[in-house]
Image (cartoon, rainbow, N blue to C red):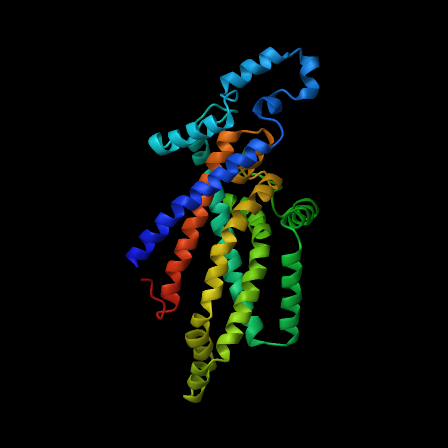
Length: 323
């Protein structure tokens, strides 16, 4: 297992390099740069800004250097000094600025994953046990609706119904600007964005859990367990369920990129002060150092989650051995 983990970590290095290189290229081919976002072309004549002033601005931010040189400088600072750059907007180190908002995103992501995993897997088990029943058909239909509907549509509907029509949840933010701030208040603000972000993952977990459990129930060891007279509860939970976990573990690992990517839109809609909201602002402002730093951290989190999923395989199925 140790050799396998080390090998996976070594493989992650070129993968991360490829991701950050591709991100740098994409950010370069985007129209405009930070100076264009700071001083829009349509307002330059009105503001009295000439090309010489724009050139001095680009020089102050290092945007006058060739693309290859800027890329090599970024890599040098990252590898030799662990420096992810400085935000064009605030002038703060990108790592420090992300550290301020990362806890909010981790809180939202962890609650979303737990909600979608626990509720989705539970509904999948119920759907498999009640196969072809009315409940099974209703859950299947609901799952297709959740999968097919974009997250921002759920967000708008949820805000309209549960924040405006029925004022059960706040419209946005992580805590009140003036008022009590404790665990229950934070949980109240977290509930709606976490539920909205978790619906799509919930549907996927439900469908995978149902299909995997149905496949396990048809295996020989399940028939043997029933022939020995074991209660149905023991057959479902003690034999079939654990062996049906592998596909569910896989989709949990694969769903993390979708949650992080989906949080960009959801955090913006709910004004959630996390990496998603910061990422959207960085893209709009062409804040390249922040875009690069956030992509590196986000990609590292996804690779770590996939490694954790592989390790969990061995716990779920003792027959799996990593050599």
